[in-house]
Image 1: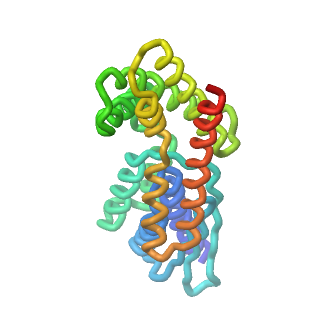
Image 2: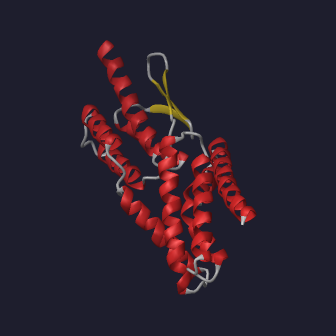
Length: 253
């Protein structure tokens, strides 16, 4: 009996770890819940229940013994869709019977400890190219591309670094928008670019919480109203922080 209970708790640990990695990496709530229950079912747990919010995961299984429930706190969230894909791949291997409980837990731990799929410099380069491309999409002239790329790269650099130093939510977005807007205006005043508005918009594009907004809508459509509203509120406050940072710059100039 003790061995059976230990196995059940191990299954819960594997399911919770998979859910934690996915939620911290930007997965939708319904995808996290579905993956956790599929993993439990693959290991013989016929009836399981999961309740996921952006800040926590509650998971329980029902067997002949009293219902077992575990809670896991989620303290940080980022965007790393490679990890989401990797966990989904492990889930499919578990469903196919290719992984034991201990092997699955070990592989999930390896994914959790792995660094971001794209290096820090690649992320900055991607942000810079995104800022420049959006200037063209907004029908701006090519002379506005370079200042937008430079300001966008600086803004994204700050949003990553400040978040590591100051854990307060939305502060990093405010500082990044403030610095990015100031840099855009400084470059414009030096003669780089001819359209300040498009340069500033291009600068801010990498900071926009697009994935968060998408996940909020998808969760609401899937019936996860608490998670959808929470993510929507987070996206709204992030946009407010970005807008406040730019408003300060525009007021001062």
